[in-house]
Image (cartoon, one colour):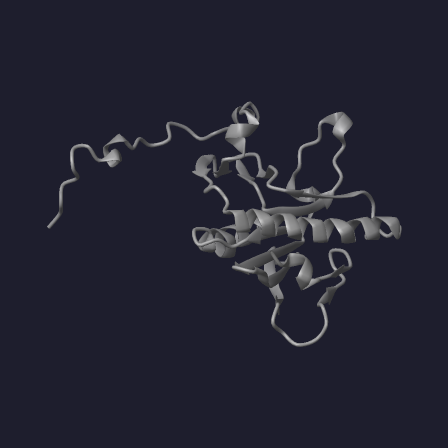
Length: 210
């Protein structure tokens, strides 16, 4: 038995997207609109507004990565590196696949040529799991970032006091699938976790506390 919708239900106003968004159409959008959507296979996905805790965690993670990126560049082992929050990342042109990672470490772009941030520039993408993003972050984006060839992916989780865990994945180039390298937990015994790739990073949990 089915139940009819009330006549004033907003669901009556739903309409299918008339056509897939092209790269050119997306690039013509204002930043105000672009920052509120992602494009998956040409179809618009509306992004939920981040919570204050989500924004704080993203900023803290970006600061942590930026500090280590500067040290790596100064040591002369890497070229120019940049860290950013919530920026357009082009994974594919046709059909258009455009994500906005919570945090991303990438090789500097050629501003004089108007170079766009693409998967080949990215060294590490970080997504912060929120109640509505579990499937996207742990399944959809896990596959998309791997197929796009991004070498490293972190999935981070929060509680009311800050970042509590970081799941680390590295790309297996033969299969183009991420392999789970392990998960750092805030409450684990021992000193701050240290990693060597994509750059040397020490996970200072105090820096990720609200």
